[in-house]
Amino acid sequence: MAAVISADIANAGRAVWQFLAQPIADTPWTQWRDFWLRQVCEDRFVVLYFLPLVLVLLLLTRSARAGGPQYRGDRLRVGIVLTGLAFVAYVFGALYAGFWLLSCLAFHRLGERFASECRRTDVLAIGPPLAAGLIIGGWYFGTQLLQAAVLPATLNAWLATHAAWLFPLGARGVAWEPRFAFLHDPRNPVGPFPLLHAMFYHAHAIGTAYLAVRLLCYFSDIKRGTLPAQRRTLLNFLAYACYAPALIQGPLERFVPFQDEMDTCHERRSWWNLPAAAGRIALGLGKNLVATWYVKPVSMGYLGLHDGLLYRHPEQIESFALLYFGPFLQLLHLYLEFSGYCDVSAGIARLIGYRQIENFDWPWLATSMRDLWRRWHISLSSILRDYLYIPLGGNRRHTTLNLCVTFALCGLWHVPVPKWGIWGLVMGLMVAVDHYWARWMKRLDQTPDSRWARVRRSWLRLQPLPRVCAWLITMHAFVFSTTIFAGGRGALNLWREILRRVWEAL
Image 1 (tube, rainbow, N blue to C red):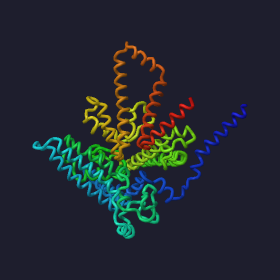
Image 2 (image 1 turned 60 degrees about the horizontal axis):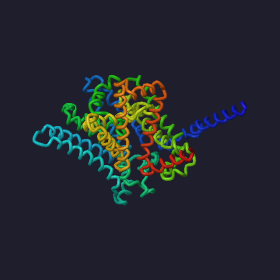
Image 3 (image 1 turned 30 degrees about the vertical axis):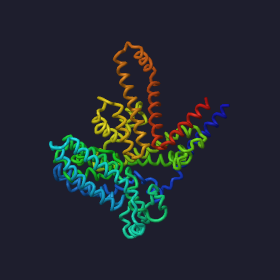
Image 4 (image 1 turned 135 degrees about the horizontal axis):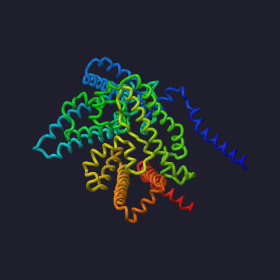
């Protein structure tokens, strides 16, 4: 009997080892174009293309050491603008770089006009903020509409042949550049990509979504009077908007902390940063590789997330474990990619002495929904709290309504479709329940002689069981709520199928 058990353990160990080692052994490490560029440096990780420009940036600022702090900071800002625009031109195309620069110039001019309008007493107080919000929102959603615009086929083909530098990376047809899978146009699977479709293919991958949030913070700070005119120079604004490592998908740094970092970067710039920066970049790439080796094959192969099998026909998935943990794998894939990108961005920032805000703080250890949003996408959640939730009333009045409005707008900001708004409403309700629960627990602690207070103390004595239960509830609430935006109405199919199998097992 012992021999049989030992053999089973050995077989299980070999199976686990093969699962872990085989993808690494099968990785085409030497294929620079097809593996490193197309699979590793794809989507969010195109930020790695900025690494060669870091050397240019450091050379541009090296001669500024003899100047004062302001001089060194301005030289760094000039370098950030130049290298940022060069990065945008290469990755997203020269035409998009021109669009980005013109947009930033226009918004800086609008900001200065907004600063003067906010001081006027002969207009409605809500007028300037409403106008600015409509302009920023119109610009943001307008960029998404441009994706559907179509140039004449002959003009598009001529541009692809004679002006390929206008097109983004992956759509130019240059021999050594990868043809990225995410630049897929079902209307034209063969031949040159439609120029505008390739330029504006996804607001959350080309930086427009994150620039819109930065602009809302910038204009809000102007309205609050926390941005003096001497800080709102054109150079400061362009550096804030063109900082390449965080341009694509954040983290969302605020204007004043960013400028403070620019003024003091030279104090932290040294060769000692190189090992730590390389380690942080390697950590981000490692997360991406883990997602590519282990998570993506399961989610795309067995769960069929690429064709919607998990949400359209969950009954076809035989394994209950795969069915139940499918949403967990899907969110884990997102976390590994997004947090990995933030690690790479933070590592690049460290090379120039810039201390980038951390965007994730072990969110999988959260034991409440409020705790989760203090750990997940920290830069966005803090901005939503300070610039939307608190101005709406925060915890002072209409807490549930404020939370639902905040998260609904957060969802629609990701993708302006109903299912994302519904996800936001559901998330807002869950955070509101968590909020009221915490307030009730606090009231119980203030009345230690009540029956429910005694029950609470008895339950807390069973640690770590209460914390484990809180963690399980939080993770399930968060993960299964994300199936709403991942599957839309298909989320109901998944929930029904899981409940049906649980009921039959009982």
